[in-house]
Length: 208
Image (cartoon, helix red, strand yellow):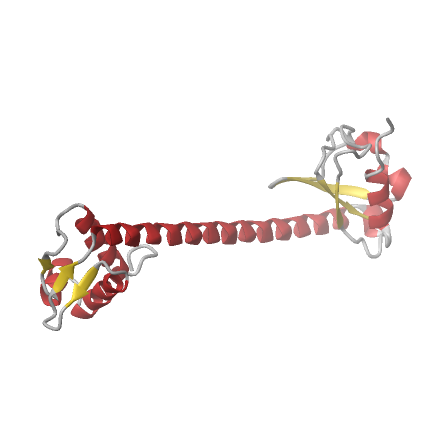
């Protein structure tokens, strides 16, 4: 393997690029598999796979005598472009997998911090169960722009704010001066039914 690319595919791409660069012209013959194997320092089977890829895309033809004839510069270009497109999809998939992994780690961290908060807080320790929930804040919610201290959340709902998710960031144990913004996800804990009470309180529309 060469990075994430199988070596036979890397060789096929190199040959296609050399065709585009006019090292191998249309209609010309390139060395047999044995000589190619020596040039790339790989086995004849690896060369066979590389040539087979190019043949399938119409870039080359292979005669019964094992001669490799160059068929099309245009198809050599298409072969490389097709590979680039598949690489873009692969890169996006890798990025998604990385983001999901980061999210799992963030969730695990949040759970650990919540457990620590429960263990260190007398008030929260008495909540059974403590039920951590996330509530998304609407754009028109009346609490947007207010600080946590101004919410008087415990008095209104019996809930306690333990974290704020804001995009990819998370603020653990935000202080009373933390300002609530639209689209924040507020993590609170409390007794059974805390989600409905707190969600209704948080997302009550602003009075015009």
